[in-house]
Amino acid sequence: MRKINNILVHIIIALFLLHALMGSLILLGVSRISFRILSYTLLMVVFIHAVISMVSTFRALESGQKSKKWYLRKNTGFWTKRISGLSILILLIFHMTAYTRSNGTMIAQLLFILAIFIHLAVSVKSMLIARGTIHLKDRLIDCMFVLSVMILFFSIAIITYYIR
Figure (cartoon, helix red, strand yellow):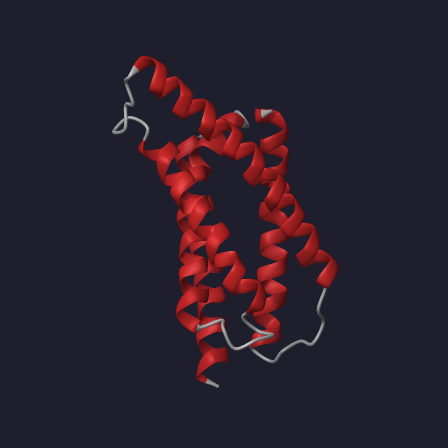
């Protein structure tokens, strides 16, 4: 199950970056090309990832219930991923209707991007370790830099769209 989830995560990251880049270019008025199939594919893969992650969460809750030891401080990364993932799923509803109806506000979109950033930032180290990455610290810094630049670009596109 972990191996499938790891593959899904890589697909999600690639689709997310492509979707966000295309969406940002549309919001900035640079492009009019919309790949709806990309959006729906991303949504489907995110849903499968969420289901697998929920199964993992329920197993962790069962284990904690049996042993009566939760190790919350030692598992902050695990629970941060779960809370940010849940936030992403909730904010996804606002994101899906943000540009078609009036119930998507700039704050909701920026919170959505922040939740994604937190989720990826907490997850990137374990993803690199799972891939057997050599020079982990250098790769981690590179990944965080690229992620930060992309998130900043997406945020600027959203702010520009709502100001206009």
